[in-house]
Length: 110
Image (cartoon, rainbow, N blue to C red; front, side, top):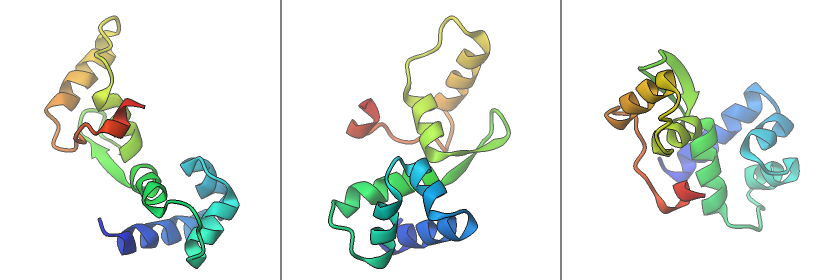
């Protein structure tokens, strides 16, 4: 996904909801969204675009047959196996061979 695609994704999300709602989903301030959209964001745009990619992109979960954010998919697929919860363990096992499974990155350890 290119930075242009990410910015388009952000613009579409803001058009569907609002800057305040999108800012809450990304965990940033509304003014950060406003500055990013106007091209005046003073911070690290790479980190902000990573938030856009993970929180505003969605994938279809074949195990649950629902659409979830890439962030939810990543957190579930890369967490430790929930050994005391059989249904969640079945889901986790399905994630390990899922084509949507995100590759583990260094920022996934946060």
